[in-house]
Amino acid sequence: MGDFPKNARILSMYVRFCEGRVISKADEARRFCVDERSIQRDIDDIRAFLDERSIEGDTRTIVYDRAKKGFLMEGSEPSMMTNSEILAVSKILLESRAFTRRELNSILGKLVEGCVPLNNMKLVSELIANEKYHYVELHHKEYIQDKLWAIGSDIQERNLVSLRYARANAPRESIKRIVEPVAILFSEYYFYLNAFIVEQDEAGKYVHKYDYPAIFRIDRIKDYRQMNEKFRVSYANRFEEGEFRKRIQFMYAGRLMTVRLKYYGENPEAILDRLPTARVVEQYEHECIIEAEAYGKGMLMWLLSQGNRVEVLRPESLRKEMQETLEQMLERYR
Image 1 (spheres, rainbow, N blue to C red):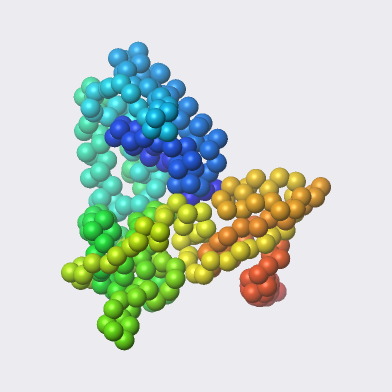
Image 2 (tube, rainbow, N blue to C red):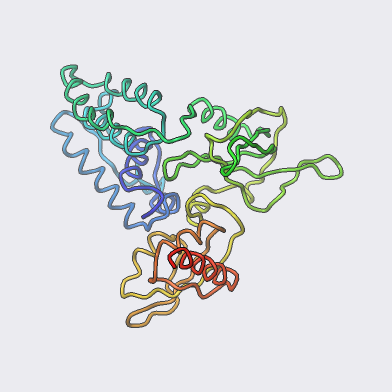
């Protein structure tokens, strides 16, 4: 399972088509960590959706522009979302569990009020009523919408920021960090801030503490404030979210490593889908050798979820950590 579900991927592309963006299959494949054939199927799905709407006077279509080397939307439609679009977005929001009940009710209320004609408002409300009633908030119950906007602005303006971050194993304690915010990501119910932790050198200049970005769950960020100081990023060293997503599991960072695995089975498709950087380097009748790049602890967590289907061959440090963890697990059942 990838970090981005297919429906969320199609919605993202559809919105950008509506905004007049030019979409490249190669760029989208990198953004969402899938192959270009998957992006072509997504574009075909959007085309089919627009074809169905043509009987209602929607003239939009997706075409390939050779000069711009990408796909774009031509034609026009009424400016408001359709009832189908509102229902689809509502279902995705409910499934994500990304917001508190209060935030969710506010967002859904604004969506449903946009139904046209108005007598469909009741129908859409009824279609989502049960899920809305049984919606389960995440335990943190933090309101994050204002934080998202503030962080997004600082990323765009490259503002250095100071924050306090509550520890996962001791939520009443916090650590102070000064960071360069570079991206907002969403994965497994939570929004995350990717940022480089910085500290002052002997000359008083802020420098990166590590050569990889840290990951902060946004609901755990306290006392977030701008420091009235900018940071610079060269084009060559800019942070690329798509490349980072290919190598991260469960939003646990750490040092980048090349992992070599043995997969026991005839079809490694599930492994290759989960690890976008993976490639089969040796193929046998009932097993294969796979190599992939990945960051830190998240890779260990994912490997443990695969049971006896995979064996870590290297690096030796990861293989040893797997052995120790499995022995500790087995000891609990003795």
